Amino acid sequence: MTNPNESKKKKSALIPIEKLHEFDGHPFKVQDNEEMQNLVESIKTQGIISPLIVRLKDNTTDEYEVISGHRRLYAGKLAGLTAVPALIYPLDKNEATIAVVDSNLHREKLLPSEKAFAYKMKMEASKAQGKRNDLTLSQVATKSDTASEIGKATNESRDQVFRYIRLTNLIPEILSLVDEGRIALTPAVELSYLTEQEQTYLLDIIESEDCTPSVSQAVQLKKLSKEKTLTADKIYAVMSEEKANQKERISFPLEDIRRFFPKSYTQRDVYNAILKLVGDDYMRRERLKKQREER
Image (cartoon, rainbow, N blue to C red; front, side):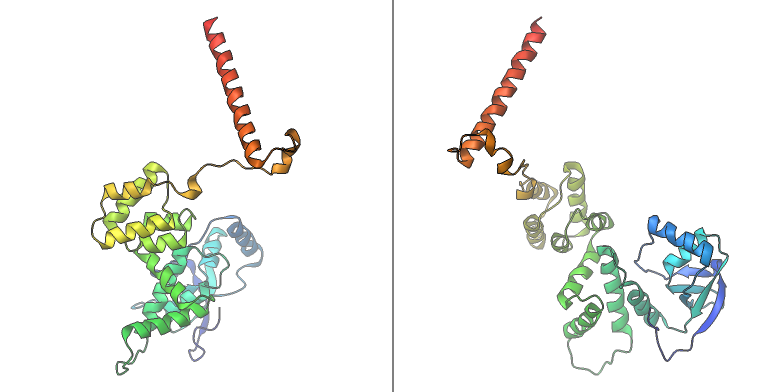
C-alpha cells in the first residue's frame, strides 16, 4: 500500500490484537483457504514482516481500525499472535475510507460485490472530502469525474464503475449469485433496477426452477418493473422462456465418426443415421424388457 497521506506523521507500535478492529463497513472478504493457511505458516516462522496500517478509532484512546492488513491480522490470530506490528496514521474517516479501498483494489481476485461496495465507499468519501460548494458543475458531472478517477486504479471506465455501483442495489442473496458466477455482470446490472420485493420474487423462482436470467430476460424484467406491472406471475413467465444457452446439446468432431458412414453422406445424412440407430437401439431394449417381464 502506498502511504495514505505523505503529509501525515505516522507512528509505529506493537498493538495487542484485541485492540484491533475491522474497518467499519469495508466490503473485502477474508477467505479461510489454502492461501490463508500458507500465510499462517509463514507468520508462525517469520512473524508479520509488513506492518498493518491502522488509525485510531473515533472517540477512543487505544482502539484501532485496520486500514490495510485484514488478512495479516486474521492470519496472525490463527498463528497465535497476541500483538502485531502496525503503523498508526492520523487519518479522518473519509481519508481512511479512501485508503482502505485503494489498499485492497490491487488484489488479483476481487468479487463483484467487493468492487461494487468499494467503489461506492470511495465515491461517497471522495464527495464528502473537501468538495467546494461554490462550483457550478452539476452533481452528475461531479459524480462522473469522481468515477473516472476511481476507475483509473483498476483500469476501468467511468461507466464500468457506475455499473458495479449499481450492484449495491441487489438483495444479498442475488448479489451472492453474481459472486458465484451464476449471474453475469450485465444481467445483474439490469436486475438492480428491480424493487426489493420484485427481487425477492425473482429469487424464489431462481431457487425453485434452478435457473438464472439471461441478459434479454433481465432487460424484460427491468422494463416491466419500470412500467410498475411486474408481478410474481410475470417474472415466472419471463423466466420460463427457453434460453439458447439452456438447450441441451451433444456435440463431437465429425471426423471421429465419418469413417463409419459412406463418403457420399452429408452431415444431415449422418445426423439422420445416428438418430435412427439410437432409436432402433431404444426399441430393441424396450422389446427385451417386455420379454423379460412376460416370463
